[in-house]
Length: 208
Image (cartoon, rainbow, N blue to C red):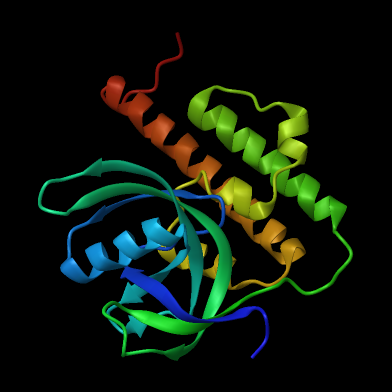
């Protein structure tokens, strides 16, 4: 067993996909997950979010840390803010735990030369999307330091797209994928703005 392989890793199957750097609020109410989060808080440990679908649970998920306990209710329920840390794959399920758990392997990217052109294109598309969505311009130094995951963590993509991003073991490939996703998001925003403008004009094009 490698030093990247961990037994008894707590899993939280959900109808969502998390990526590293993403902030994910969770409401913990089932008894088994209350037990799990009590242990996590005691040990300051990570757990894994995996996408649970109608056809089963995905084999690659995102480890998360508890960033903040937002609310602890009298009946034991919790509202917590979690943050994605690193991808993993499920090696083997462990049914002997009081909550879902598995032996997992934390995943590393393959060794490759950075594709600066792909990175520049991704960051440019991301900056354009941020301006379109928020009217805010990003600090150039802050933008230059962002990885594909760090940028994607702030955008609400579809689950298939996020899982596809999480599955990739190449930063260059992730940069190329998020470029396409950011450009598609900008087009959707443009379409929504045009539709809203048409609605305000009762369907008539105004030239003044």
